[in-house]
Image 1: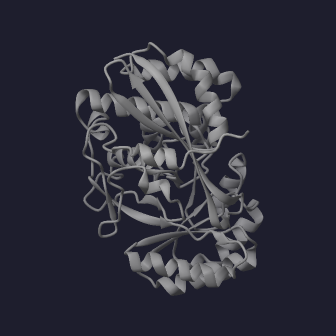
Image 2: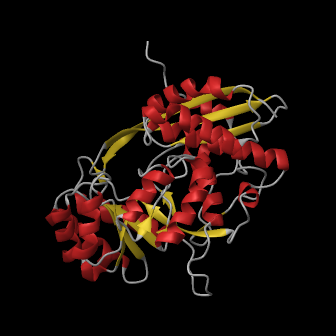
Length: 379
């Protein structure tokens, strides 16, 4: 099964209502899919985390190394790509591009062997994943707490049993927002906070200590990902479990972070960490270092499918009847093509998402939607 062609699909949609996190402003939704075609007619789909233009350039540069290769040689291909481009970066766009390629190869392998990816990767521990709603960004031009509570009400009505909101907009405003959301949700719905590295460790600790009585499940990316020592300081200066890792790409980057006792919960993203191949290796690191793995998810239904297969193979930790499944991050911000590009979109089912059971990723792409949302090429 030899690779004959690779094509990138940059999808884009301008937002009618822009929103922001502590680290960036979203005026549009931008995602990059890629398809790998083989000489037997099979097609594999992947997705890359991060800037589509940069990722597409890396994929274009990697394509000559892939043409003619056996698509089932997933590990040799991964190592060849990484070794060839490691001098251009051991994280970021290099790993984002490899991630999309790797996911597409696993999709092809599943289709070739006529089984779902989670079965190829060793078997699933679960077929239903409890989901949490990701939202709570700051809507530009709107009152922060009023718009936040209006949004959270929709998630509660939809049946979510856990919600994550964005912070990093100033200590006083964040504390007021967190308290307002906790009061609105009551005690039965989990609440997580994500600063998108909007603080230094001093202000992050101030926020955490002022909301310590709000039963926060985790405090995500409180500081910039490079500040490993600040993560370590925060674990001793406040009581909320720390989470992070969506940009600690590859086994090497994540191992260094875990060696420095940075987080209680690791959040690799299969579309950025190095794909499904690398994500599976990182499960061993989580086991060795004694941290929970609750993956980060951000993208279209291709990313959702790949992430669901990964969630399915995360071993229970500890292996006991009381071990809970890691929650699945289900982005609820506006993105019209997130669901429309597949024939059977992922929907919440009594607070859970079901792992696909079809061959490979278990999804079918709607090409008309790819064309509809294709980014316009600059003139």
